[in-house]
Length: 454
Image (tube, rainbow, N blue to C red):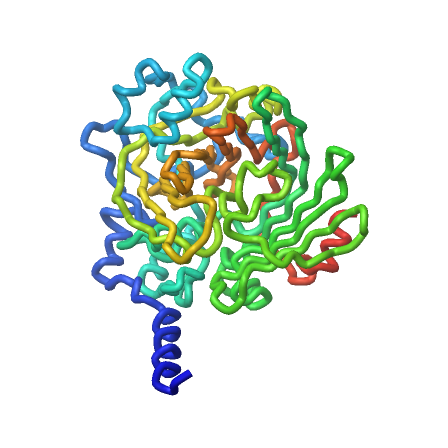
């Protein structure tokens, strides 16, 4: 290669990897203590009064809460304000996503959306709010889309975003607890309505989310998440497990994944586990980067920030979270039981990702609907290469108010073309999730996986 061309190439690569200025001025950051919430949402309600002001969310467990059981519903007495069906959805089209409308059209006799009063229940520990303020002043992202470079700790890096990619990274790095463990059920439902529940034990550790000064980040430098799983049931896959290590910036340190198979009693490094690779034990109904509605690098898409919308979204899903229902009460033949789902009117950021010309992915376009109060993707629509709406999914959030933290209790993925769906997060009638704050790298090594699955 000619030396001049070589120099130009080196300079181009360096510029691509250079952190873009995403931080805001001190004058802008002051808004997080005024018109905006500490995480960057609009503190005030809407003009009509149908979205209330944020006043701190749930600040303590409601009367009757028992830590040995799933979280009780603090809004159990709320009435249904409106029921949306295929017959009346055109009257509410501006507040529905294309995926929601497609689901209503596909199942006109069985699917409905029950709309409840809006409860801005989101709340987090004070150190998370403090970190969000610091991130606003300090955080940079990598223009390659492979991570956040520096200046960001604990939670979403860009509480006052200006671009679509910043909003997506706010979701990727949102605070969801430090260490979370428990049992989770998942089911891939056939067109005929049949499924077999897969029960899995998970141990999810988020070193990035740890409190400052506790040394956890020093033990896991640059690590967003370390995740171990072990299949419990059915017997055919019992004893299989996996380990995933997710760096914050994957420019030079990509995600690592290992799998343990009981049949061979070996831990094997997976050569590839990202983007549109099929998710394990999902019957191909979601990709790896569909987990948590979206995760991982953002580099294969151009992300357009389309602004905010008031939309009917899944929220405060305590009925789906309850000990009073089981797997068979929730998982129906065509969709989850609509009487257990709760929808509310909330403001969401709308971000559209269009596949870059030089990139490959089974989704040519994807639209994310991201909650302003939590930075959690609540809904996602995905389109195939012909522009046809292919898949839609929802994350049904609750406030785990013993922490407190907003997390999805149930994620549902619908294949609109194939007529199947996949659900994960089923934890009803089982021990509640356990939240902890410590972890050691030796617990998340390939050798540790071998002992975890026994």
